[in-house]
Amino acid sequence: MKLTDVRALVHAPVGPAEAQVPLGAVRGLALTRLVYGVALLARPDALIRFSSAHPADPQARRVARILGARHCAQAALVGSTRAPLAHRLATAVDVLHALSMAGLAVADRKYRRAAIIDGCIAAAFAGAQQAALRRVSGAAAAPAPAR
Image 1 (cartoon, rainbow, N blue to C red):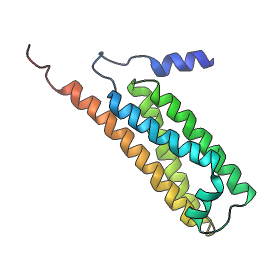
Image 2 (cartoon, helix red, strand yellow; image 1 turned 60 degrees about the vertical axis):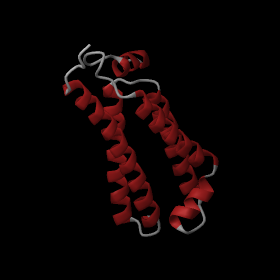
Image 3 (cartoon, rainbow, N blue to C red; image 1 turned 30 degrees about the horizontal axis):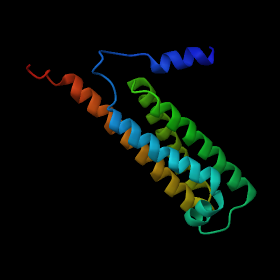
């Protein structure tokens, strides 16, 4: 599958024109995610020190930057489309990330605090994404206003 095929699939409408994620929700969520991603890319040491209460090692810095790049890419994707499929995929990525952080919190005492904080952030992104999607399904189910 080519990248253009994936873009076409993600941006393809899946229902009537009304069934799109609200623009305000798209912009706000994408901007919040972008700021967080840029912070992870630009200042991983500060965020790691805050979230884990110890200085960042090279591996933690590398992981934070990879996560930051993922957040920036995801912000670009969800910020560029109102198609519900893209937002469902973003929700799934965030849920999987939150679950992986729960596993890390159990397995690694050194990064437990950081994993819990990052897992909560991922869960918050998933919840916000899901709330935006619910507004779509609520709008699609609501009767059209009389003219």
